[in-house]
Amino acid sequence: MSDARIEAYSRALFEVAQAEGNLQIVEDELFRMARAIEANEKLRSTLTDASIPAARRQQVVEELLGGKASNTSIQLVSLIIGAGRGRDLPAIVDRLVQRASSEQQREVAEVRSAVALSDDQTKRLAEALSKSTGRKLNLKVVIDPSVLGGLVATVGDEVIDDTVRTRLEQLKTRI
Image (cartoon, rainbow, N blue to C red; front, side, top):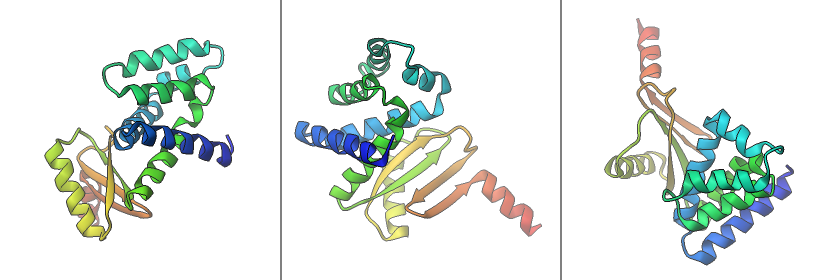
């Protein structure tokens, strides 16, 4: 899809979520949904398969998100999937997150962790990253089993890799 269409969809999603009064919740839920689609080949192929009727693909979304996401998020994802733009969902959502962060005068910080972080851990991590980078951040945590331990944080072009793998590589280099 062209950048103009991705931008148009992200702007529309942003405006709907803002009008509903739950922009922060929606952008967080959509971010997590987009990462789940990226990580799961079977889900991605189901939601993007044009041979599956749009109503069935939308039903899959509603079954997956029912009770786990706000009604607004479910309807927005269903709209994108029904319009045949499932392949573009991650790009659309990334633009939405950027737009929402800019609205709050924050930068997006994507953190990859092997395990889910508690609310307290997330809060402390956001404070530490904000202090370290000198920026106000909109923290997005992605569960990534390929991260064996520790975290990888990306803030703009800056990558902070504090994983066990990196520490072992540094130790190996020193020895």
